[in-house]
Amino acid sequence: MAAKHMAEQVTRRKKRNPFVVFLVVVLILGVLGAGGYFAYNHFMTFTVTANGQAVKLHRGDTVQKLLDQGIASPKAGNLLAVDGSLLTEGGGQRCSVTINGNAADVNTPLTNNAKVEIGDGEDATEDATVSEEAIPHQTDEGDRSFSAYWNGSIHLLSDGKDGKRVTKTGNVSGKKVEEVTEQPVNAGYRIYTAKPANRAIALTFDDGPWPETTDAILNVLEQNNAKATFFTIGSQIASTPAPLKRAKEMGCQVCTHTWDHAAGSGEGVSINKMSADEQVQEIQKGYAAIKDALGEEPAHILRAPGGNFFGDSISILWDYVDAEIGWDVDTEDWKRPGTDAIYNMIMSVQPGQVILMHDGGGDRSQTVEALKKALPKLAEQGYTFVTVDELLSYGLPAA
Image 1 (cartoon, helix red, strand yellow):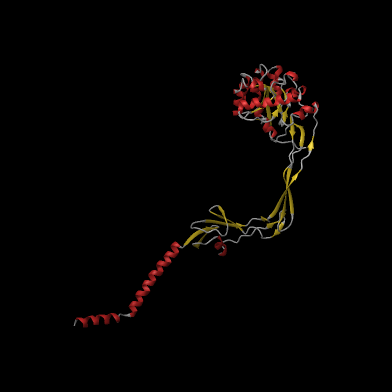
Image 2: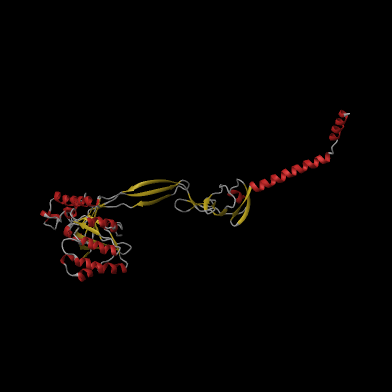
């Protein structure tokens, strides 16, 4: 009986309604399909904003997909020859693309909530073959007479330097374009006064460093946010180094006015009266004294005593001096003509000029007081106070 009962149950299971089975299968597939659709839409798609329009994309889509969908129709830039002429219309950049404000291209994959901007492409220039050649410099000996010295405050000794010319040859057009990338600097002796675009002037002080006076002048400069150049006597530096260190820290420049103002055979006024070896020693010892005090090699810039830099001295010192600095305005403060007289001479300055004053060699209290009056007035007039190096950086004035 038990065996018969079990057989009947198996028979009834085999006779289960097929329609019910079909419904169960359909229901299962529906659930799986809905879940898959939800997962696909939730995990495999995302939305970006392209040119202000919300767009649904699929994982892995790039900017190209937006173009394929017609979200934007940018105009391609042109391809230009090396000389700027039109080579191929529409042959330049296809379009411009930014994603979240950063430059991109059409193959950049997109991510959810990205902000995409697609615009017209920019022009492009053809690839080119580049060659470079030197432009030979020329030599101009210049007028080395004493009278010519006064034609300008800057006396430049240049070894010359070749310039550079670059030629670009278009790989498609074959056109050539030449550009001078570096102008040649002619060798020789040049005399000029700087012609800056602004109202820069150079305050210069000779014969220091001097106890108390150099610091007093530095105080005035500091109060007026001014820089200056100090032309020093080398033999005096070792005993009074502190003001020069302060001058350097303030952005001022320290140069040489020779070792001992051309004492001895120079009669205290002219290196031209000295032998060639003595002239070289005057300059080299002057540089060395500055280096010992400041710990660095000074610019090879000289102010010769009395403005006596002419003739053979230029050739003798050629390898030791890059520039000799004279002056455009002589305050004659060494004569102690009075504060007002010195002040009036300072106020006569013009842009680009060099003013001669003294911080050493005697009582310079009149110079200090004149500076206190003059510097604020000059600043009100738009003048700026630069070092000699900065004045030289303006370059040769146009012919």
